[in-house]
Amino acid sequence: MMNKVFPNKAALSADLKNNPMLRAEIRKQRVGASIRYIILLFFGLVMLYPLFWMFSAAFKPNHEIFSSLSLWPKEFSLDGFINGWNTGTEYTFGRFFLNTLYYVVPKVILTVISSVIVAYGFARFEIPFKKFWFVTLVATILLPTSVLLIPQYLMFREMGMLDSYLPLYLPMAFATQGFFVFMLIQFLRGLPTDMEEAAQIDGCNSYQLLWYIVVPMLKPAIISVALFQFMWSVNDFLGPLIYISSVEKYPIALALKLSIDVTEGTQWNEILAMASIAIVPSIVVFLIAQNYFVEGISSGGVKG
Amino acid sequence: MYENHRLGLLYISPYIIGLLLFTAFPFLSSLIISFTNYDLINPPEYVGLDNYRYMMDDDTFYQSMGVTFAYVFLTIPLKLAFALFIAFVLNFKLRGIKFFRTAYYIPSILGSSVAIAVLWRAIFSLDGLLNNFLGIFGVEAISWLGEPVFAMFSVTLLRVWQFGSAMVIFLAALQSVPQSQYEAALIDGASKWQMFTKITVPLITPVIFFNFIMQTTQAFQEFTAPYVITGGGPAKSTYLFSLYIYETAFKYFDLGYGSALAWVLFLAVAVFTAISFKSSKYWVFYSGDKGGK
Image 1 (tube, rainbow over the protein chains, first blue to last red):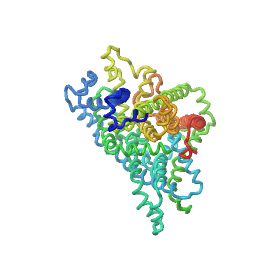
Image 2 (image 1 turned 90 degrees about the vertical axis):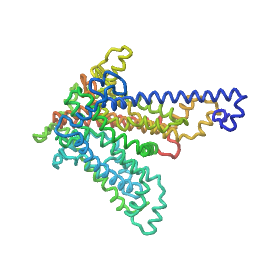
Image 3 (image 1 turned 180 degrees about the vertical axis):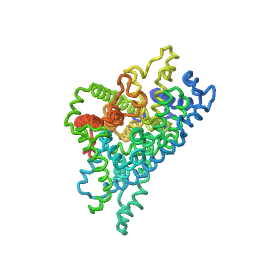
Image 4 (image 1 turned 135 degrees about the horizontal axis):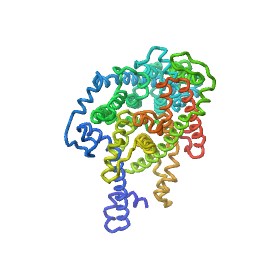
C-alpha cells in the first residue's frame, strides 16, 4: 500500500512494465506535480511581474511606459535615472539615500544590543514579577502604535529633537520593539545551557557568559533581528513623515512621496527609476541573507 | 538559571525604562490629552468628554471606522487563505521549492515601502499598467483609483500581495506535521482533501491563530499604502483610521481630538483581539505540552 504512493525507485523498475496500477499511480503523481508547478509559476509571475515591469519602465522614455506591456524597452533611455537622481530639489537622490542610513544604521545597532541584553535577562534569570514583565512585552507587540504617536511627538518636541533623526532611533536603545526581544527569548530558550553552566563553574561572571558564550550562539537570531529591523526601518514612512520636516534631511521614503506629489504622476520614468533604486538594497540584502529571514520569522512564529 | 534577582532586573532594566518612558507614559498621556483641546500653540484646555461627544456626530469618524473594518475583513481572510494555499502547494517534495519560496517572499519584504505604493499608483492609474493589459482584451479603461469600490480593491490587493511572510510561517508549520499522521490516515483510506481538513488544519490552528492576530493588528494600523496611493479618497473610501488620526493631529493640529480618535481605535482593536483570544479556545488546538498555556 505505502509503496504505491511513495514508490522506491529500485523496486519499481522491475514492477513497472507489468503493473498497470503502479503505472497509473506514477502518472497521477506526475500530473499532480505538474499542476503544482503550473500553479506556482502562474502566481509567481503575476506577483513578480509588477516588479520586473517597474525595473524595465525605469529604462524607458516616458511616452513608452504605458504604451506597451513589454519588459524590454524599445527605446533604451537613462533619462529617468539621470533626471530622477537630480530630483526637483537642490539635493541629489544620493543625499536622501545617505539620510536614510543616518538613522537606519543606529536603529539596527541599538535594537540588536538592547534586545539581546533584555532577552538574556528574561531567558536566564529569576526576576521579580517576571510574568508581569513578559505579559507587557507581548502586549506592546499587539498595541496599535497610533495611540502612542501624539504624546511621543510632544515628548520629543519638549526635548527639542524635532526635525532630527533622534526620535526615530533613540527609543530602540530601550528594547522598545517587543517583537525582537520575544524572538530572541524564544531562540535562547531553545539553546542548551550546559556551556554556560560549565563556564560559570570556571568562574565566568554573567557579562562574560553573555559576551563569550551566549552572543556567539545567538548569532543567527541576531542576524535575523538586524535584517528585519533594517528592512522595516528603510520602509518606514510614518516616522520620518512626522519628525522630519526639512528637505535636506529627507530619507528615501519622504523623497519619493515628494517627487510623486511634485510631478503629479507625469514623469513616471523618473519616479519609477528612483523607486527601483530605492528597493534595490532591500532586494540584494534579502537575496544574500534570505535564510536568516525565513529562520527568523518561522522560529518566532511557530514556537510562539 | 540564575537566582540573582538584582542582576536579572539589571539586564531587563533597559526594557523597563523604555516601557515606562516610551510606552506606558505616552499611552496614559494620550488618554489625558483626549480630554483636552490642544493645538500646540495655546496651552491645553480641559474640555471633559467633549471630544468623544463630538465624535458621536462626526460622519468622518463613522466613515473611517467602517472603511478600516472593511479593509481588515477583506484583506485578512484573503491573505491568510492565499498564504495557506501556496504553502500547501509548496509543501510537497518539489524541486525548486527554495526558489519559489524566495520569489513569493520578496513582496513581503518590500510591500510596506513608499516605492511599492508608488508602483501601485503606476499600475492602477487610469492610463496605468492594468488598464493597458485589460485593453488587450478590449476592456475599456477603468478608473481604479477614482471609483470608491475599485480604490478599496486596489489598496486591499497591495496587502494581499504581501502574503509571503504568513506563507513562510505556514510552510514551517506544515513541515512540522508528523508524516506518521498522514500515513495512518492513508491506511484508513482518507482522500487528500480529507487529510488536509481533518489532520493538517487542526494541527496548525495555533499557527493560523498566530498569523491571524499578527496580521490583523498590522492591518488595523495600515497607513503608507492608502496615504500614498489614494490619499484616502475618492470620497474618503480608503480613508483608513490611521490616516484620520494622522491628519487630525499633524495636519490640522487638533491633538486633543486626534488622541481621542487614537484611543477609540485602541479600544476597538483591544475588543477585537480579546474576542479573538476568547474564540481561540473553541478552534485552536494545542497538542499536549507543546506551547500554549
